[in-house]
Length: 194
Ligand code: ATP
Image (tube, rainbow, N blue to C red):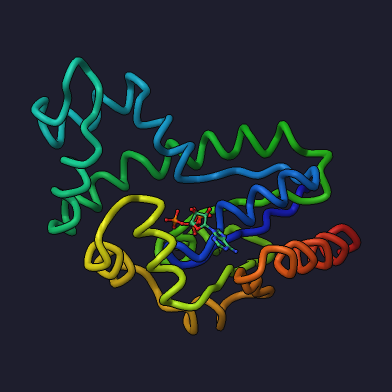
């Protein structure tokens, strides 16, 4: 059975960047947030979301994700209802995807909320990506053209590094990308023979 290696880290730590390095090294990578975004565009899921949130979140059948995010951000009950639609669909999609990679020594499952969503329980090992808080804030402010306050707000919904690290098998410090890449090489070597 192909091993599933969870890859996570706080906002702006660089998990997608690190996931791309794994991909460049030939390791199959599943970016859970991207897949969930695609799945949310399927007709079946659109119908389910409309049932709970109403049609006003859609323009020409395209979901306004910002409006949806604003609703669930302040409403745990609605968030739970949304997750009950999205999570099983992503799980099914991932189940099919991993079968396509059954000959790979392992695959990377990248998710921002790997721990918060309990998906870590389905992983054989976990890698956490870290970076200094201030760098993370600066990176996201620049990448998303947003404010420091917005980044801090998003950070506050996630676990902190110490908590993530305590449940991880590997930690990649993503400050200098060459050093991070050499850490990735070491981890790949270990995971290939495990
Ligand atoms: P999010 O949780 O918001 O999805 P993330 O953890 O996936 O973020 P990335 O999108 O990979 O983070 O990186 C955040 C930004 O920081 C990107 O613009 C990326 O190019 C930049 N970045 C990543 N690694 C480094 C690094 N070592 N040095 C400088 N900038 C970096």
